[in-house]
Structure formats: C-alpha cells, structure tokens
Length: 330
Image 1 (cartoon, helix red, strand yellow):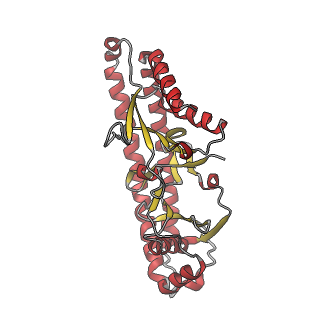
Image 2 (tube, one colour):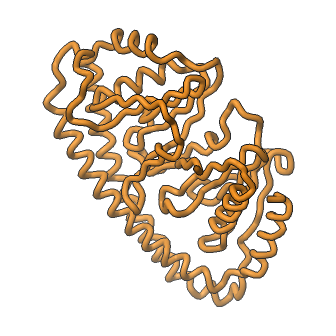
Image 3 (cartoon, one colour):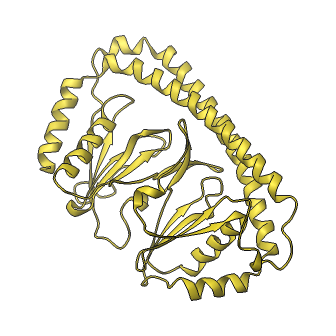
C-alpha cells in the first residue's frame, strides 16, 4: 500500500503548506530533487514514474498529493533511498538552501517557439486571473467555515471538563519517546470533493473521538504530546487544530470525527451550546461551496496547461527525465 498525504491543503486560512513534514524529523536528512517548470511540462509524470519504479523494486513509497488536483503529486519520498522528488513551483516555491549538499534543482521548463508563445500572453493572463478569482472565492468560503468551526470548538471546550479529559488521555494513551512532531494534512477540500487519505496509512489501532468534543480531545492530546515523536495531521478548516494524531511507538491513531451522537458527554461540565449544531452545518455548506469553486479552478488550470503544452520542448524534458532516472538507479 502506498501511504498518501497532503503536504499542503486548502484551508480556512488560505493555502497552508507543511512541506517540512515530508521527511519525518526523527529520520536522517533526505536528498531532495526540486522540480521546476511551468504547467504541463511533466513534473507530475516524472514523480509518478519514480513512485511506480520504486514500488516495482519493492521499496516503500510515500506520495504527497496536490490539494488542487488529487490525481497529481506535489512530492514523492523513497525512505530506503533517502530521496525526495518535489514540485518546487508556486504556490509552494522552494529552492535548495545548500545546493548540491541537501538538494538540487531539476529544470524541466524548456520551451520551443517562445516568440509564438509570447503572443498567447493576453489569453494566459485572463486565465490566470480567472483562476485566482475562483481561489479567492474558495478561500473566502473556507475562511468563514473555519471561523464557525473554531467558535464551535471553543464553545465545546468551555463546556468540557478539561482536567478529566487530560487524565483520560494520560492513562489511556502512552506517549511516544521524546522527539519532534511531524506535521502534515491527511484531509483537504479538492476539485474532486473533500478527500481523506487516513486509510492509506494502514493504522490498525484507531480510536475514534466523535462529535465536537472529539476536536477538544485531539487539541488536548496534541498539547500533551509536545516534545514527543508523533505525527500531527491538521484540520483543514482550522489548521491551528489537529484532526488526527498518530503515536508511532504504540501504533495508535486518535481521530476526531463528525458525529451528531457523541458518546463523550460524561466529559461535560455543562450542556453544549445550541450554537454548535447550526454552526457546524453552515461550515459544511460553505465547504461544499468551496469545493465547487475549486472545481472551477481546476478547469481553468487545465486550460492553462493546454496553452502551454504545444510550446514545451518535450524531447529535452525527456532527456532530463531519463538522466535523473538513471541517477536514481530505480
């Protein structure tokens, strides 16, 4: 099974990247190949080929999917080889800090007939602006949804017996060894809907914490897990709060899941606010609107790629690709 993650997500605070979480902090540094080039030049094709070759050779693979197109990759990691291939273009522009030691750039942005391509500038600019407009609308919806969810979590926390919750967590879930936390997303709104990759991790010991109180439990669990080896997966609406927490030493994952029939009411000091159910409902409606806007973003992005493709020097891209694959020896 290929483990899948989102290294960045469309969130209630705009696009949020957690690309530093691609390599867990408790593992040795990896060498990163940063892929550069415009839309449609073959970055995704190259990463998918590397992932496929690695798996064919029995190597573990982690795929980091693009929140703007979950069929595309933002990165791929081959842990046994200590390598990462990464799309280093906007909105997550990256460059090597120490070129040749920790990373290098692989340039796939080779173009033909640049004079003819320049004549498409006006058409491209209109598509780019349309794309940005749909993203603005999507993020406006997600920001409003995030504000509602954050307020709901705060209301629930005000009604909860936090000392009792902390005691329950300490007794029931032993923390991992001291270390640093790995932070990523497993869930994001995308043009294909809200996608969740939790099941690709293959975790057998999963504890579900239902309802809005589940989010309070997760918040407290992550605070308790500070300074220990853990994997924190953020909630896309409220990226300052967790959605999942994985404790690798015990192989346990804690999951906050939406459920109207919470079984955690014994941890309440007072009844939950009447504000919470309509707030969560409106957050769901706004998230659905954001997904529709993201679908329109994908449509304009596809049109942009279609304009680029006739002018890409794919022969040169293929030579660069083959040279890299030979270097990786997969």
